[in-house]
Length: 505
Image (cartoon, rainbow, N blue to C red):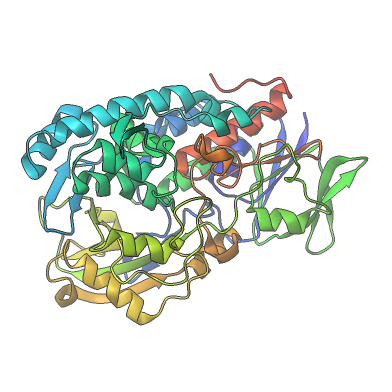
């Protein structure tokens, strides 16, 4: 039995802890905050409850596998997991609206044809077929296997089978997700629909590779899911599974540094000076925090994937509304920006090639995701509604009340009479995310993607220090609830089976 010290209690760290404990190791988690979950937080006020992090769960199979491998009760006996239908409702700048059924290709094709005109659904369906090819080519190396030592193969190879078209007297293939939308989908609204999946993860579609097509494909193939009571209930269930497996937690306990001995991780020194010895250390923290905990750069090297920095953040506005949720309202509505190019310029700068340049201000007309769960557990009674508005914003942004009002104005296109119903609103800023996660500027990590020269890969779970591993959104395979869960599985496999571990089965 090995002694394992885990730094942080985010979802990836919790997933690794449960798996390591069931393998017979003694696992102790040190979390500087007062609770678990990391970015999967909750806001409670006046009987209203809001998720402050992810509001929906894609690819629930990751957490189903976690619960199967760590105990007798499956996921569905620990949380009330329900499929969201429609998966999303979209309001485009020209006023066109469409609801997309959950995990139904035929339903999506019909809905798009009805809303956007004959042929639109078929073009989107054909795109999803190509996106599936990209998914099939990258699923194992990007989700189920440790990062390859020759990761450059993933960085250089474009897995999406782009359609070659004649442009400017020569045959060309789309080089970015935005070009895929413009060249292959044939309708600017379909292009906006595609780009919104990248934007939701803080990616600039003008720079993101065609491989980002796997993002809408994952939602289409595996559906969109919600946990009744809010996504915080998923964090609670994973935490309780850790407790059942005898994982030990120390909250309000900051780690000051990672102790090394003879080039190997040997434990952690707490902020109060106490030292906890360990055979392995698992760090579920952002790169900047790991830099402070180590005496040298454990993630850097000429042949290694560098840590991502300067990613965009997220602004959320939580609304307490009088009046119950109307029937037939979609759980998730995306209100698209009136001027997408201006929005992207505001977020990423005007460069069209190379790494995205961070923006400095909220776009004048941002894309706003409106979440209306209609969950009785989130409101004081049936005569009230809890709504969350989410916007991708530059990291480090210090929003003003004027910014919040601008988001409310956009959201009124999805929630008529919003201001007349508003009891109060509360804004969660990038600074709040920074406090919860330790990420500089409240940056939110994106899922790992192939191609793009490796810019969208994340550092390996193994580090340059023997016995030190990284887990969570800032490590392979990147950000997002399913990716965090997979990072936990990978770290557990690397510790239990050793460096020859080839990935989850």
